Image (cartoon, rainbow, N blue to C red; front, side, top):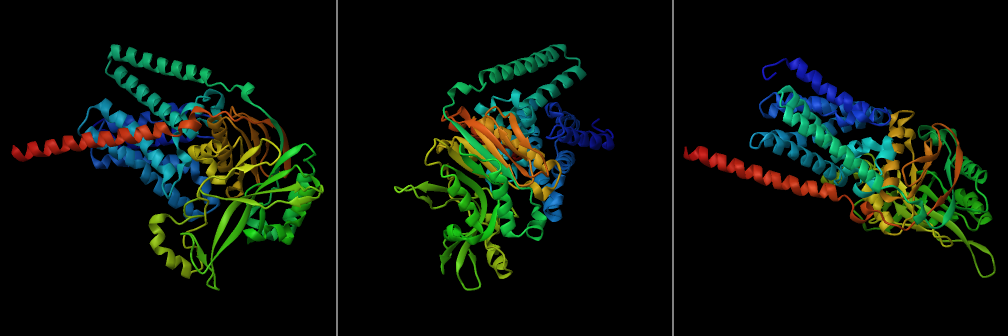
Length: 539
């Protein structure tokens, strides 16, 4: 096929993209991920390693991005096109590295380099200013939670590594069959069997032990089902609060220790120090006074004043010349009985969303030089403000320490594990997936929450404005859920634990090893290239 049909190569490249799409949540063909890269690898193998070969990975990756994230269009057409094109281009970088290695190294070295480069790319895409790790390969195994309990040791990086190794071994098996090399066929068959046996053994060792859990808590999550596109046209701010309080009252009781509302549920935008006296929120405080042991964790939109000096890089400037930050935040509200048994409102505790959606909630750092331009047009100089570190919401009466995770943040495994290191024994996810309407977006987002439960061995209480709200136990099993486009609440007794999983203790160590391997391979490649240039110059 070196001189073969270009249409066949394009078709095989598209086939890889379609297999990646079919293997992604919520298509339920997860097994396709373990063979999805083979058609593309086959195509690359048939051509000499030139830069032009990148057109084939680009076709695969473009197909995959469209097939899995097309639903972004429902929120923003421009944003969807930009995300798909930019992500496709970025995903081509590991393949560029692979093609470059093929010029100077043997096939096995190049394939191992491709795995290292891909994992390195996923780690960078988790941590830089335009982070969009939605398609981290390890996320794709979320539908088969019972078979990936070993994520408690590896995180999603282990899933990405497994998918790549399975693809590589299967690809080598097919090549050996084509060349009728029976010994190699046997070796690769045995390798695949041993790999699956090892993964099964790891899964057995990783089973969750409920006996390590300590205290039991009664938790309620609320799903108000308010259309984000008609948030203030359909209901006033007061009516929204009334609806949240009414749904909550129907489910909580004297045993309930925690109530969770979704992202931006409290939307009477105000300064953070004004929240206790805001008239819209008085029904909330009245509810809390009825249940003195109850803690509310809710999404909220707030401002914070700084005066005439910009205290942060994200500070905005008002018409009066006052600098302030706007926050997509979470708030902890609760009451406390004083010595005279009077119920008093405690000072709110805030956490400001730190993992912001690029282009929607934040201006990437390398575009900060354009901040004055954005400011002149009434925009933000840097997007929403953020908290420097995760904040754990601690209950004053119970051993209940909640991690306030806001929407997009729930796809960051190591970031979520930082909450657990700081004492969180419960993950509360507040989200609003209604922007994408009834598409695959909110289903994928729910699936990813299962991975955070496995990695940290913590219960997840997920409150989603329009759905899907859910309780997920530490094995990644959805115990209860409230479907799309429904209003209501869920109540669940959960057990908390202070045990730290291996992943929580060590984080994304597989990604970091891959980064080191990538640097090592690039240095070797550059050394070989320089030797080749010197030989050519002296010839």
